Image (cartoon, rainbow, N blue to C red):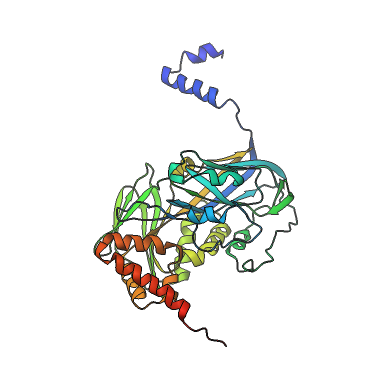
Length: 405
């Protein structure tokens, strides 16, 4: 049928959309019917008193990565980088029965890319210019990363890099992500070919998150969906010492309230339920296990937090991913982690400060600063005492005599 004949049967608005689609998508990407891409990652945030994500120093704490991983070039900049979302360890796997080449680009809204491996073809803003970015809250652009030449090599007997410096041991969480049946990758870089089981990157953003969680006076959690799409699942988790518990809330359309969980669960039962959740979202079982193993120590540490599956529409808007040629299937599963300042947490930290227990304080790791800020905001009259106790706790640890074995 001639174009003019077809046009007469299309309503005006639909035709306009078709014209715009043709104009702005003129370079239609080819598809590869044998290629599959799967990705998982974590969005970590902290809930303030209003329930929404607050600003925090997202890169405090251990780097927890092998030394061969690339990163932005200023430790001073990283220490001062504050945002609402720490995008942690997205890993992108590929599957194909035959060797094939792809290019990949990920863009992080209102964000920066901070770590990656293999070496990327392009990172914007460039690492050497990243100090020019005065702060994420004054940054309206997006950060991006691209690998221009990635070869998916299912029959390759790959040799993946291993760290050789302190902290790069076999127990490093980075290596757990390799325990899947994904095809090895060979990436052409300016430093030569690099092999890995996945493409890896991390970043920080000042974007909003699709959920809010307000801690009520009796400890219940009021959760609201801020996205247009249903949040597929929410899980409330709490750990106090050797005891832990969790409560599965299921899908979240608009609002729900969850009671604090009873601390009678086990790591095994929680891992099974999390794996079931991740596989229902489309991950392969070995990918789900690799994700849980990667984050076992961090996800299940001291404190209270809400886990949720990031809705697909929100994820694709905040972190669009382009793969060329287009895979026949692309699955992206991100777990949101929203740290909570509950009455149990504030009571525990209050006791720790009063007894100057540095080891107890360190259990809260990179979240300690925002937790203390929330405690002072909730009780301004105690702010000075909190600061004094904190100072005494750190000074006491320095003054304590060191014992020898």
